[in-house]
Amino acid sequence: MYTLKLEAPWEEVKEILKEAEHELSDEDLAYDPGNADALIERLALKMKRSNEQIKGWIESASHTKGKAS
Image (cartoon, rainbow, N blue to C red):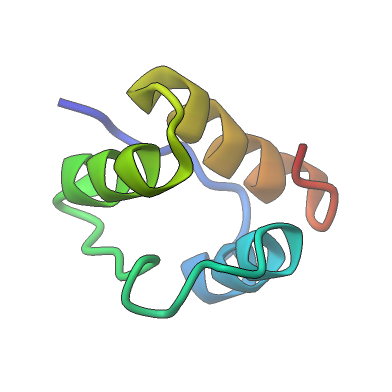
């Protein structure tokens, strides 16, 4: 079970992620704070990355506020 440690509001993080990965839709980035697993698993599958990579990518975008890597 994953928990995301976000330093910015989800709407802001979501926009950063969409700028970094243009193929992501609002549906791909639908996030229920009580269920980070669904978001992480959906993105890992779509982006062909591991769940840990996706979790780190999301948290990185939150911490750097605009520089998702």
